[in-house]
Each structure stands twice: as C-alpha cells, then as structure tokens.
Amino acid sequence: MSNPYWSPCIRDLEPYVPGEQPRRRDLVKLNTNENPYSPSPRVLAAVRAAADESLRLYPPPEADEFKAAIAAYHGIETGQVFVGNGSDEVLAHVFYALLNHGRPVLFPDITYSFYPVYCRLYGIPWREVPLTSAYCVEVADYQGANGGIVLANPNAPTGSALAARSD
Ligand SMILES: Cc1ncc(COP(=O)(O)O)c(C=O)c1O
Image (cartoon, rainbow, N blue to C red; front, side, top):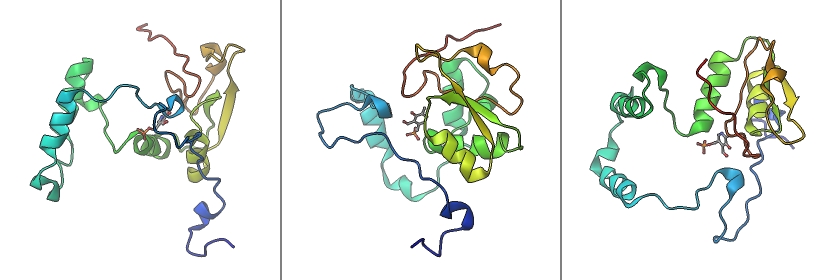
C-alpha cells in the first residue's frame, strides 16, 4: 500500500536505484566514482581542523572564500562557480532552475541514471541519444537541441570522455 503522506508527485516516481553495492570493503567501486587512493594527509588534516566547535554555526551563506579558491584554481570568475552539498544537489537545482521549460532535455543512453529521475520529478520531457558502438558520445547527434543537453564528462558509467574545445 502506498504511503498516504507522500506528495502526489513523489507517489508514482520510480526511485533512483544506486549501482551495485558489493559488501566487501576491499573493493573500489568505479561505478560510483570511488577513489582507489585515500585523501592526502593535508586534506585529512584540514577536515579535522575544520571539525571544531564552530560547526554549531551556519557557514558563510554565499561560500565566497570557497568559491574564490575554486575559481582561482580553474582560472575562471567567481560568479561561474556554484557550490552545493554534492553534485546531486547541484544537479537538482540545474534541472529545476534551468531545464524546466517544457522542451526536451537531451542526454545519452547510457549515462548517469539520476537524470531521468530528476526529469520525472520536475515533469521535464527528455530524449535519450544512443552512444556510438564504442560507447562514446557523438557530438553531432545533439545538434538541434533546444531544451538543453546534459553530459557527464567523462560519462558515467562508461568512462569515455570528450576533449575540451576552446572554439
Ligand atoms: C555523473 C555523476 N554525477 C553525479 C553523481 C553524484 O555525485 P555526488 O556524490 O557528488 O552527489 C554521480 C555519482 O555516482 C555521478 O556518477
């Protein structure tokens, strides 16, 4: 029986199903972007140093210092940086705020399986564009898109990447 407390838009939603989650702890799950290497000692020290009594307070609401550091590292403007709690939250804002206009969003078939979940949640039409037989994205297949294109680069879980272009 469905839960009567669910909002109607959630009741019929097909949930996101995470990739296979083996219970063995000695495996690195490439399908969920796990890293075979531990964080550097400097990262661990910085995380530990930040975990002090100041956690009782909200962090700076605009994350200005954090965004400035990211922008400086990548050589871009601070205004081009958007931060959130993990990329799934950022993706939720992107789908809702930028792609929710009634025109179909294009993304590859196969790609990150959360994209159709967000489309269903927000009522966004979408079209899946097949990968090539080598599991690569063919850029020409996306020409004519007028509702946005979502590409994970490298693609997940295939791992194939498109080179950056400056023209
Ligand atoms: C392409 C892609 N985007 C986003 C995510 C979610 O990342 P996060 O853990 O930062 O929310 C994943 C996780 O596997 C992913 O493969």
